[in-house]
Image (cartoon, rainbow, N blue to C red; front, side, top):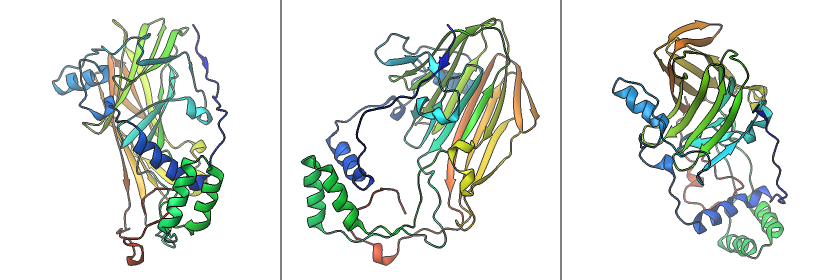
Length: 346
């Protein structure tokens, strides 16, 4: 079965005003029952093939001990399509641990993995380091809450917009960090393709077959270790070749806003360091990936190629840094109640 590109999904839901979004999220969180996520618990190598790879790597013997739920399980969501361009990133598969996350597209031989972090916001500017709002009265907060409960979203949104007095400043909008590309040489026709999310184990899988045999690429984000794990083993009796690189895609709308980046890759590590526009306290962010394999690693044209390998294991971390900004909130903001369209920290 030849994989085909995914179609963008649309929902016939009327969008709500941005000024009321925070209140809806708060109501949803308060009303929702507690949910247990696999990524929030200690990784169990017996159920998580990626975790098994890490565990076996730590004891010196890397193996592929996949034992996650099979396709057809109620906890596994399969798909036979995948995004082919960055603009279709919404159809990628998601995994995260509350701090960092990934979006896996699932192209078998030319995959894209987007890396994100909860702290990846456009940096504050030195001209306006703090976001300013009006102090909102308890009476108006009660009115907004009551109108939301009554389903009067337009009225609630208008009142929130009227009283918040948002003047800009502080952290900007949320954004993706960068992408990793994984490229493999052609090995005949791709068949039996499926990508899936195992919600019980927190694992993203990309499976396919070609002239070399059956392949599986696993990804998950460990909360225990704070690390994104990617693992791919060659089919029995075969060796694999994969070329790895990091970059910021123009579709992320960062380069056109003045974000710059450098890559400092070696044969052992991939590294991307980004800097926000000038006048942002030299703030930026970084991603680093350790390459673990029994194959040969070579460096060329800014990318690392692993060849003649029976497995490739990638361990990644992301981090935001504020550089010369020392933090703090002006005394006038201390202890005030605010009503805003965003809940991002200053």
